Image 1 (cartoon, rainbow, N blue to C red):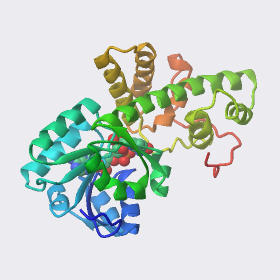
Image 2 (cartoon, rainbow, N blue to C red; image 1 turned 60 degrees about the horizontal axis):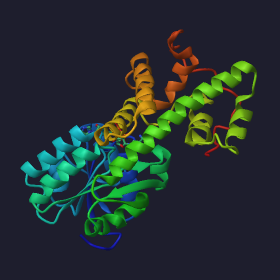
Image 3 (tube, rainbow, N blue to C red; image 1 turned 45 degrees about the horizontal axis):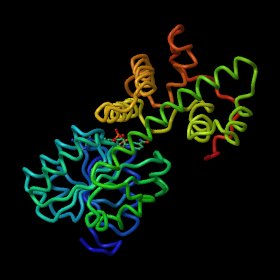
Image 4 (cartoon, rainbow, N blue to C red; image 1 turned 90 degrees about the vertical axis):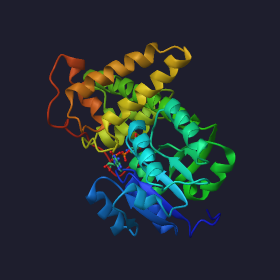
Length: 315
Ligand code: NAD
């Protein structure tokens, strides 16, 4: 593919909450984007943003320089890659960039398979949520052979800040471990907030103090003020996807024989929340489960009442 930022053709497969704004940014930065999703509505939306809507992954990828995948999980990534190989859409010298939050061990196995056909796999999962995707402000955790990474950097730089993490699979490993931390922080923050509010503290004041103290995290800085306190629970990152990432991180630790005591407890708590909330719940809705006293009271269908809050704050 070309080293120029504009002019290269990117097949973008997976046009969901993240893939749609990422597609828009690539189009706006001069890439020709060939977009596919199993949802026809998602393909139409991407076409409305200036991408070429395609009827299959093969059609999207067959004339592309880079194939970007932004899909729910490793199983779907594997199935789509199989379809691309069988459909003749990938050839020696091509590069697949898996930006999904996939399983690092499966990523390595897939990379080995593709390497036999001379195809490179780069893993480039992201952090920063839908807002980060909309602004091109994602942290991108990149794993892969340095020469292949070099070739995809121009596209990744449009989407955020790529960080080279090591060999293929390294990005997916760091991503899962990051989300294990994030999920653990969110549960801990929710328990602390409930305890403080029950004691009579002002939640805004609590967050203000946490955010200038050692209890600070992405949950105190971003998730609670923006998605929980206003009562919207609209981060755009599903609970099921977070739970998937946590299990990947726990599995990674288990595979390497490192401690998992807190990881196992966190997964169990999040699993219990998943069982009590609708399957489509946003991950920030675990705060509703914590508010319902960890199981002794039913989770209310309606979001919790909003506290006074500047909804435009983006911390
Ligand atoms: P999403 O569910 O909104 O989007 C996934 C898209 O993939 C859907 O549009 C779906 O129709 C499509 N899809 C499923 N199977 C397909 C197939 N076989 N072929 C083509 N398209 C297919 O998910 P999302 O929130 O956009 O997340 C995508 C990935 O990014 C996930 O791996 C997730 O863990 C990760 N991620 C999400 C966020 C977030 O804040 N939403 C943040 C960081 C990472």
